[in-house]
Image 1 (spheres, helix red, strand yellow):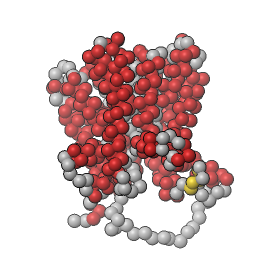
Image 2 (cartoon, rainbow, N blue to C red):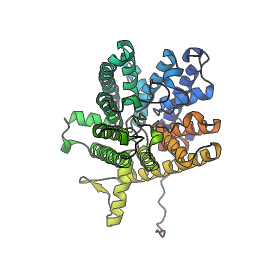
Image 3 (cartoon, rainbow, N blue to C red):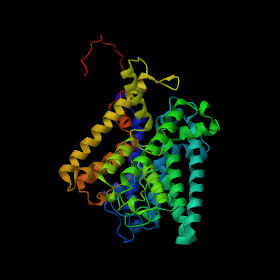
Image 4 (cartoon, rainbow, N blue to C red):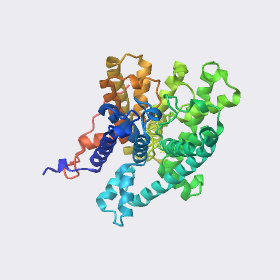
Length: 446
């Protein structure tokens, strides 16, 4: 047996996600899964299962009106597994069975949780499950209390649980029907703030949540990673709110017809959701092209590492930005907060962003050939798939077979991670790695 063919952690993660998607797809093809008693076609089922497992939210059939309770619970289960990671759930089952987590399982957890070492990964995995269920339960309670008067207690509790899990895992699936997300609650403070809070907490990453909890939110004691994530996320939300407000406040189809309080609330919510969540309170097709381009940028950036979101991640953006600043200043090292960022982190960030740009460009190019839609719409759908966002201009249900397959692959790459997939395909085992240092020779740049 060749050592190149061993199942490395990266390969196990890729295969694991694929297996979860396939299992979910098979369940969604069953007659019991849909209201019409016929089940989804296999391609529709794979698309829906991929979107749920990759916590994206793009749909080719309406979740609220197409699926039975069984089908909706399958989707919800895939969202939960995909958001927290199947290795996290596998570890939980191992612990519940009273078994000791093996070294191989710890290595898989290390890869899944993107940790530098195996030390503390089991403790982090248990923390991820505990904090996730606690936050989802609180979100479900608040949403249920709000919706009880609109939907009745039984339906409100179910809707509260479904949308809390979907929001915390940044999935964007909803049950309100007709692909309208939560546009009916554009001015509702409770619904907006609860769902936005779930999205933000799920998107900053479990490492940050654990760090903040451990240090009682003392800024000076937080790790560099936590400070970068919190600061960058806050800036993106603030800037996003201001930009969307300024671009849309004269648009009578969106903010222009609202009072000042609702304008701010809607702008804030729409600035939060492109960070891989997928909910919307504004009709996206009514937004100006400039606003849509700005949202595309936010979707491309996405959430933060070890979170339920996708995109290139906030830390990759900051790493490359700081590297550019250091280059302009003539500094040899990249520094932030009296800390030096290692060169390999910068290199991986550059590789990730380059891979993401190539992927989005390639898929969009393919869609311009196979689909009958304008370039902005296709770029929006593709970026939404890569960032595992789920926002859509309404074109996803009209995708051709080739288009659906392309978006399925984009969602998969976006959730599992371009670098993880690249390593799974190309990375050699350590036994085969040969470190050779060739002589330096400069290239002319610029």
